[in-house]
Length: 85
Image 1 (spheres, rainbow, N blue to C red):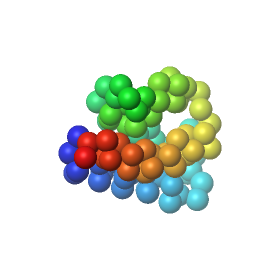
Image 2 (image 1 turned 180 degrees about the vertical axis):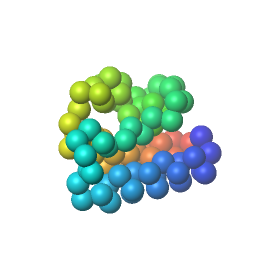
Image 3 (image 1 turned 120 degrees about the vertical axis):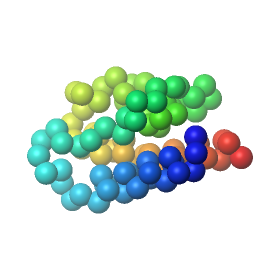
Image 4 (image 1 turned 90 degrees about the horizontal axis):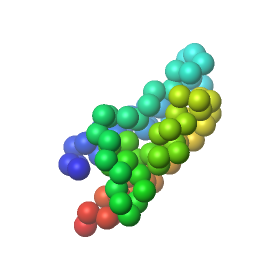
């Protein structure tokens, strides 16, 4: 993954988390970027940094649950970048 891509994902996480409350129910966007490839040791998708249970349950998740996943993405991003060093 390129540094540019990771920067964009980090910016999206900041935007989602900066909203005090979602504007409407079920309005928290998915981090999916249509790059579905599970990292073998991290256990996250290399595209969106979600686990398989998070991906599979996204459509049923509450906005609060979705925001909790988004809140984990910056730390996962740091961990993922460290794996490439």
